Length: 121
Image (cartoon, rainbow, N blue to C red):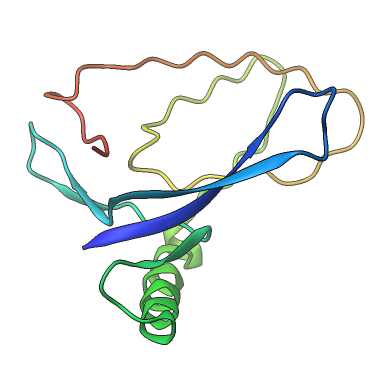
């Protein structure tokens, strides 16, 4: 099953009101090539599923997210100075909450071989 997203691309900061929207698709389930473990790759921003009408697609998304977002399936990190968090972007539905004050963030991304990790096409 193919999931549909509508991505908003912002242009250069000097033109903050100019936006372009594109349609992006990827599989709703990823399979790790090493372990064969299947992972749902569905998030709140999904717009629908190819082959399903708006009502069916919305119902399926809500059903999947109602399971994924249960308290027993969530982790909320309480940040402390010096903490480091490592996660697999394709197997973790993630977001950040609003914050106040100064925020220091160092982000590093590793892009590993697709023959070892589940990645969308």
